[in-house]
Image (cartoon, rainbow, N blue to C red; front, side, top):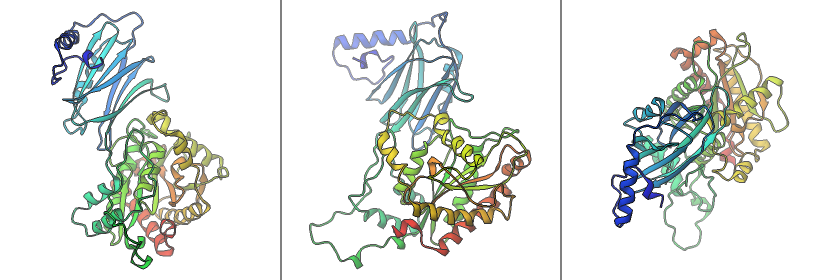
Length: 453
C-alpha cells in the first residue's frame, strides 16, 4: 500500500489497473502547486548533507518538532520520506542542489508538496540501503533536526578496506592472512543500522586441529594504530575565534600522522573517519576492536571558557573519577558529542553497547598511561603543556577493554595564538611527528597489550 503513494515512481513495475490508477493519482499530487503556508506550519531553516563511503547523512533543521514517515521502494531503489506539518519553501528546495555527484548512495532528490500539510522527499538511490530516520531535539546551536542516515545493506569490512588501501604494499599479505585465520567463534560487535559481514576465512577440513606451533602468530602482522579524529559531520567540535573548526584540524593532523605511520617498516594506521562525517563514540571503539588495533589514539583540539587557557594535554581512562575538575569537564564535553552529532538511540542494542563500554581493564589503563607518557613527553618538545602528566577521566571513547587508548588534546583552539598554530600545516606536521615518536617509543619498550592478550 505504501508503494502506491510514491510520487512520480519512475521505474515501478505495473501490478494491475487499480494500482496504475493509484500511481497516476500520486504522480499528479507530486506536481500540485504549492499550498500557501498554514498559520502554524513549521519551517525548514537549513538542510545539510554528509556523504561518506560508510553512510550518507541528510539533515533537515526545523524551527519546531515534526513527525515523519518513510518507506523504501526497489526497481529502481528509492527512499520516500513524508514530513507532516510542513509546507515547502526555498530552503528545502535547496536540498536538490546539495546532492553531490560522488555521493555513494544518493543519485538525486525530488521535493514536492504531496498534501496540504505534507512535504514528500523522494531520494533516488544508487544502491539498496538500510535507512535510519529519526528526530533530534534542540541542542547547542541546532534547532529540531530530522536525520536521514542511509547505510548500505551490507557494511564495508574495515579489515578489507585496509587491505584494499594497501594496494601493492607487501604488508597487505600479512593482513590478509590474519583475516583468513581469524577464529570463527569470536563475536564481532555490529555498527548501528549495519550488518557487518564475517571476516573472510579459508574453509577448514573436518580434521584434527593442527599443532600450536603451526598456527599463525599475531606478532607477525604489522602494528596497527587506530587514529580517531574527533567530532565530524553534524558535530563541528570547538570553534576558534577565527572560525577554525576542531573537526577539520584534527582530521588534517590524523591524515598526516597516518602517512607517517604507514611509511614505517612494520606499522599501519587506520582512521575511524577519513572524511567529514559523524561517527558515534561507541562505534569508534567498535571499529578499533574490529581491526584488532594495537593502539587507539583520539585526536582533539581543546577549548575553554577563557581564551587565555593554552597548552597540550593527554588523557587516559579513569574508572574511579577524574584527576581534576578540568579533566571531568573535558570528559563530559567530549562525551556529549553523541548528543550534538546525533545518534538514533533506538537503533542499536543498548545492552551490548553498555557492556562494550564497561569492560575496560587495569591492564588497558596501565598501558594507556605508558603510551600517554611517551606521547605527552614528545609533544612537550614542540608546544607548551597544559598539564605535565597524563590526566585521567571517564572518556567514553577510551573504553576499549583490550586496546591501550589515549585522547590527545593537541592545543586550545579557543586560544588565538594556538588557533593560529593549529591552522599551520607546518605545526600540524610537528604534532604528527611528535606523536609518531611517542608511539614508536612505546612499542619499542614493551609488547602491545593486544598482542599479549
